[in-house]
Amino acid sequence: MFHKIIKRGNRKVAKGDHANEGVYGYGNSGMVSTSNVTVNHASRPAAAAASAAAVGNSHQQATLSASPSMIETLPLFRDTAVADRAALFLRKLQICCILFDFSDLKIVRERETKRQTLMELVDFIQSGSWKMNEGCQEELIRMISVNIFRCLPPASHENTGADAADPEEDEPYLDPSWPHLQIVYELLLRYVVSSDTDTKIAKRYIDHSFVLKLLDMFDSEDPREREYLKTILHRTYGKFMVHRPFIRKAINNIFYRFIFETERHSGISELLEILGSIINGFALPMKEEHKLFLVRALIPLHKPKTISLYHQQLTYCITQFVEKDYKLADCVIRGLLKYWPLTNCQKEVLFIGELEEVLEATQSAEFQRCMVPLFRQIGRCLNSSHFQVAERALFLWNNDHIVSLIAQNRAAILPIIFEPLEKNVKTHWNQAVNGLTGNVRKMFLEMDSELFEECERQYLEKEAKAKELEERRDLTWKRLEAVAAGEADGDDMVIAN
Image (cartoon, rainbow, N blue to C red; front, side, top):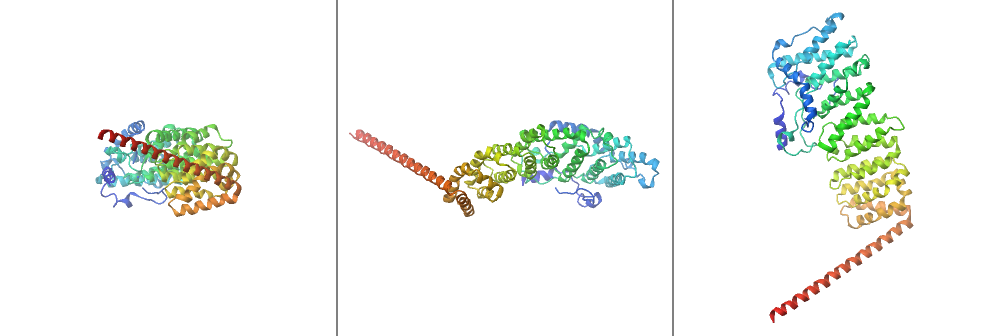
């Protein structure tokens, strides 16, 4: 509750914002709409400094906007001669470079004028009735940069100095300037996807610096903004082939910092969603660069405790690799075992689900390389006191492909798994787990009765030896207690005499 109160205190939202939703265009038709979210900049000092420098001039413009005379009403494109449209386009871009404080209720008319101007620019570019020259493209990208590249507000735990709260429980932050930002992002998207956009010219302005700043914005806690960014970056990757290696490397760097430094970033799931599509298009045989990305970035993404926020997208990326190159299955499974959670049961359930999807794409040869450590871990899951973990592990035997792999290698697997199964039948508290364990035992018995009986004999011998050892230990302790008691009685008699 304390974190939520602090979070609300950090918002700079005008009282009239909710009343003005219709005016400002929340949820305009034809725009990307999602729902809900701030950003951790303390862990990104370089990015924060760069963003601050980039928007330095913007703040001066924002102060100027308080004067109504700064916003002039310009004619519509359809009411202007074709020869004059380029000059009008540049004048409208200049108006859109002015930023506004959405907590100031005195400049509602000016904000609405800018919103209408932005909407007209979107329609004008989408219509394709006029082809922009190079100068107009440069000014367009400059206007877009002024609006979207900004310092993101700090996360609540940065303001309070407390430990980072669970991101799943954080109250989402909604950017009050979204009525303008949404249309600017729509404008950028229309520009990128337009068939009239010449990549040879556009790449001069949508360059590496622009792409890096765009990636910085993925740390925004507003999911509506991240949804737009995801679409724009994906289309940029598809259209600007020259930027593809750089984009992959930049995303790698974001992952490295998230995994090994901050463990807090708002846009990991969106970046993984983009990568899922990119991985799907990898040519075969797969480049060594892509395999290194799997080993150094994707597999270590299982380490952060916030994995539940992006696990679905991560699983898709991992399985795409295995489906494209089945030889990577051994590497992936051993990576999962390396980062297997010890105390987080919900995370363990996620791991077992992902393991099932990977095993579905695993061939027999790769399965044999990792089956011994794999089933030792599955055995530990079977005996988990958390019934969901044990139950999810037992559900692996409902998968026909996994059962066929187990059947082919039962001589190595059953001796590992037999003892955990017997312990479940005898001691597990959950009836559902007991029932599922009985079904798995029956399956192994039908698979190979001789092997099952041999494992049972070895288990009984081991139990008998363990019981005998326990009895010896108890007897030894009783003898020691008797000797100690006798010596104590002797000491008492000496003292009495």
